[in-house]
Image 1: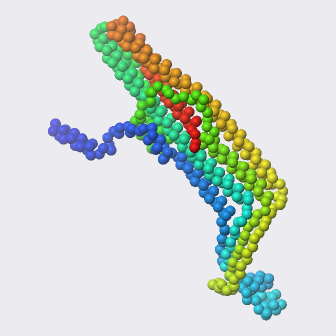
Image 2 (image 1 turned 180 degrees about the vertical axis):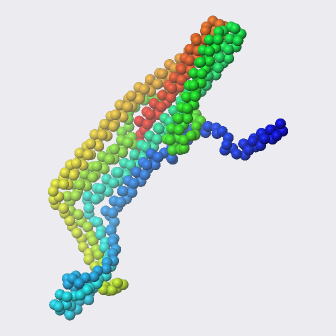
Length: 441
């Protein structure tokens, strides 16, 4: 016996020394904590922010229309071509009177040239590129707005997942209460059967009822784990953590959407408007391509017959005015295509705004229906609870059979579950309405 006690104490102290092997309690998680975690870890938001950074980088690329381009090169050449060989001598500034000898001109032999060159190109006036830069700025704004809308959607997705977990947990609570009531009834019925006051069939009926609730409770616990895994997915966390949530709000409904309209500057609408504006700027860029362009250029080079020589130097500088007068109507047709694409974007924006307003009208009615359902279910729960109390009293007096009580218990559990679902539906609908009417400043 002493050895058994010592062994038990050893296990106990080992259990204290390694808390990692204890059964983990559900981690408590508030809705705000879930939202903050998702905004840090959600993959969709990460991708949206990367798109925003890419668009900003593309806009920075357009700074080239103002900044010079500088190229450096070092070239080694050798030739026996008469024209090139004489040109090398000119570049190296080594031409002599004897070099004009026809025999030497025709047969120069091998001649080498080592050229070091720096070229500079400076854009001056390029109207089409200026409008393309403006379009790139609009695109950057577009992706910024898409990131904002993605954040708003993630907040709603977290709210939905959190409420689903709340619903699953509340369903477990309702079923646990029903199971406790059913077990109490089974204990009472079994005692009466042993006393010969009730038939065995009554106890069997109650036992079947208990088993049915136990099965539903097991399914409800699985639903809790499924809902917790989905919440982990939305938050960008590992699976397997069963979070302890705050209970579903049970306050009287107060949200009103009367005369509410979908804001025209909602982030996704504003993003589409930026896309339309960018398309218009691209069209303007195409039209400006008809205008002349003015650019400057300069080059400075060193030529020598030796590899490390930099004997002769020269420069070339100038300004170029270019005008592409006719391109076979390709630019005209391209602009026409771009105009059609812009008109399509405008129609899509109008269509999305109308559909969103239709959805909001539907949500307004659903919210009113959910509020009405809550009031009805609250009354139904009270009535079902009172009916069960009366039947239990009469059952204890032997005035009703077990079937009546079991039906009343089932009805009460069902009404409680429907009340929980009504609160869930109301809160989810209110969250979706907020998502639809989010006003981007």
